[in-house]
Length: 166
Image (cartoon, rainbow, N blue to C red; front, side, top):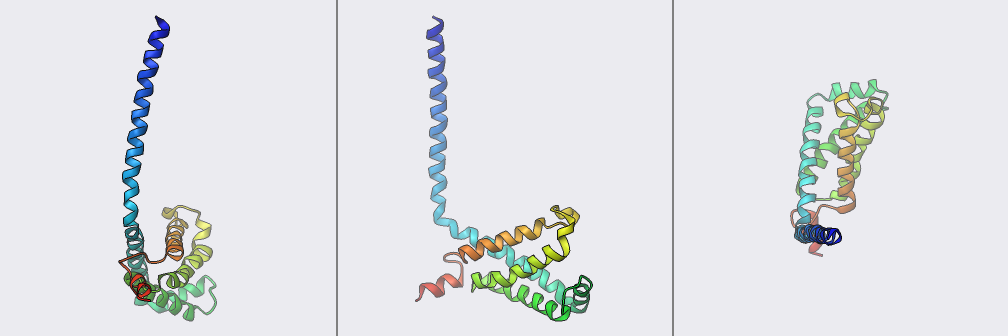
């Protein structure tokens, strides 16, 4: 009798486990249908980064001399020239990300301020954003690398429409 009750409970539990797995497999199949919308992920990354770089470029543009002298204070060579290069790469890069044109190309100059800020400014502060660390800069860099490797995406970018006309 004890054996029979154990077998019955095992069958009952295994049925529950199999039903749970079937639910998981069914849900996974439904999630895989989202691949037809994968271009939206790249679009949202582009729009988000365009906003970030536009805001930061404009804030530096409002007081170029202050930004340039700050670059000099952290021993960046040719701070005036570097300031204008960073500002122009952020503003032009933001516009190009927004419309999705030359996205792979524009990620390279946009990675430059990230690398400079990580190396010269935030590295000694550790990881945490709250402590002035590299957390946010690394996040932006990873998003830029996604765009570098994946491109602008389908449908919602000029890169797609220009390349599809060839």
